[in-house]
Length: 562
Image 1 (cartoon, rainbow, N blue to C red):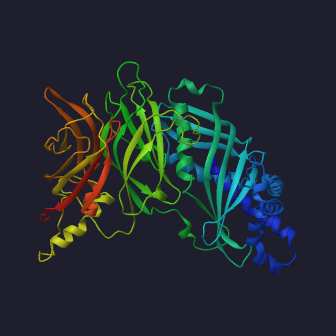
Image 2 (image 1 turned 60 degrees about the vertical axis):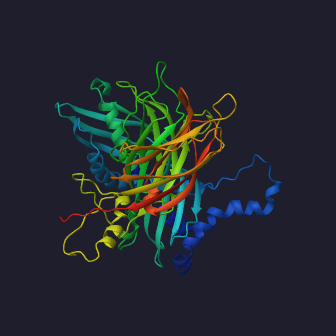
């Protein structure tokens, strides 16, 4: 619904601007050069004028200025032109929306088409406007829109069983924020070449599906499938950063269309302190991750049974279209088998916080709802490793040991090492590099370890292990010390540096056993990229404690002729 509605809003808004402008100006020369500044000045006028009357410290604490301004003038124009928009746009929208629905048609349906489509008599209401200063060459406008419409929309649905279902879409209620980008600015009416329409925020989208003369629930799964199709079509067709480019003047506007600009490499490392959703035993957590919430673009991890501190060590890759506004969202669920999974918590990280081509390790606190954060209950934390790689990188890499292995942007970084090692070789033969090498780990010291003995001391030692390779080493025991110094170095031959991880565990040595004193888990990505670094890591699973490590990577790339 928002897909077709966005196109209508873009067209109607452009027409209303032109009508309002033509009525308010008599001079053709002024019309050609003042439209853009008129729109921007009108949107800012009321707040700027009000702030001249009062200084900020004179306002009561409960006064909050909205960045959106009221638009009675625009709503009056929309109401006047809405019958004409309905007449002109209904068939056009039908022709454009049907292919989108068809591309998302559930497998249980043979066809999904409109048999009737009109927008109805109720015009949308624009409840606010804001001009966005983003430094671009054009005017970016955000419109708050509310529509409780009365369209007449009937879907002609056919199943593979030969059953035809006329499904009516009723009781449409929509509230959201549309972003309109007027670009490029030109010296010809209406002073911009095209309108880019996108749904910036979708606050509410409600609708009812009803079979004419029947019950949609008579065929199990059809109602959910149709509703999912509509919502997926909206997400993939109109939700920002996706945009629809509507030409106003003749010209080439391909530069305004959405294009991928990079790849986001994500390692789901671990979680800790997850809320237990099971009465008997512990939760069986798994994670879903997405940048755009589409079924075919959402990644899912494996399930870790009966564990509130799971370690996944899984890698995922996402296409990025707008790193300034997009987020990575991770949701942790408890797998309930045949029943619906129960949400443990969710978190998100803004991509604009990532420095291109630099690894960032983050711990994110889980919340119940990303939009309304009223619940302060602790739900656990999730550990991610993030790497944003913009397009245009010259490096390339392929792992030859995995058949049909999909190249990741992270792997592409390492071809430069392969090319440097090739000097003097037969350049007519293509070489493939494997990320293999020696990882040297120096366990320097630990600080502020939690005491485990009755006398308030401990006899700590450290166990180092590579999770995938299964190699272990351990330091000597330092007696009666909560700030031990080891300065011991261990070398590990790593066969798969991109997908292995280093686990550091601290234990207290006792004559008849050992006590756990905490751990930290590290991927090898950072040391692969930087070659060497020294860092202090907090220990998990304990009241206090830090460990100081020095890591160094010595690459030993392997090449084979192909």
